[in-house]
Image 1 (cartoon, one colour):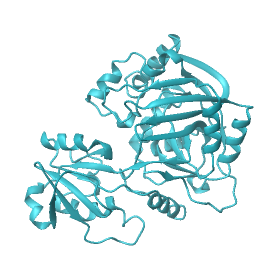
Image 2 (cartoon, rainbow, N blue to C red):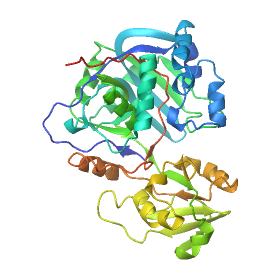
Image 3 (tube, rainbow, N blue to C red):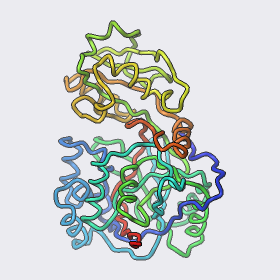
Image 4 (cartoon, one colour):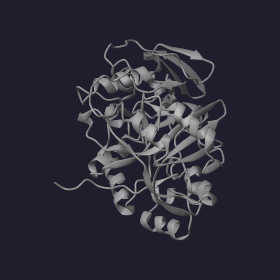
Length: 401
């Protein structure tokens, strides 16, 4: 589903600025080994985690390993990473079966949410933020990019770069089929400071606010860490998948099925809006929402599910990030959901309709006047994800007053 970035924003204020990146980037010979999916989609004990840790210079050793500073030093001293102190933007093209996306990496100014220059739509959790700050402090670098949406018309500039500049990196990600980034072809193009494309991108992005699509904890960590800028990926168009879930209630689904108006269907699939597709004991069912509230949060399908299904399963909001009761999968991983249910690890799998960009922006805009209005946790999945390890940003901190 192709969707556009933020809607027109009429407030006459200076928006968040962007600057070129300095720091470390992979030597071209090592880029395939270094790059990996974002840390938060690498689940402990999985074959994906095992594969990434088996790669000597994988960024996963820094992101999730026990000795991140030592892992960074090993990558630098071996020549796997090269130091680049000339500011530049990096245009990033991803091509996959049936799709393509072009954005760019930059250093984005870190500002308070109340300034409405960087607009969030999700809650953050203190433990995750503290973990990101601890890693940043250990290595003195920012390594996980924030995924940002802009309404500024940057696409023509990015396409001009792709058409006219030889790529710095050209790779196809090999994850042995264990992640959605497997098989995606990536090209990266360096746009140095002083070039006309650099100046134009800087000007265009500065005309509008930036909406956080993914990476709320990383941005919040940069904010709390008093950084002036943060590593970011900026794009004009993006695609949202449903963020589906597998569930263990304190009451089994078989015990409460008679209380629900279920219709058996052929297979687990992405349902229509305000419907839920449930997989249990080898069979699939559709459940229609009983009531759709009018407010921007209540009308979201994940909110409806929480109010209509979770209580009969003996669950409340405090359980939704508890892995004993919930796990989450992108829309493209239906078979993986069925597998963990068939193995008995979870009782049911539930597929939802994807959140639309209009729904997300409605929540984000409402949150400008009321900071309590944010998207529920685990409600959106932007796909494909961005490779980590294409740049290691040498950030600065704000001067103490």
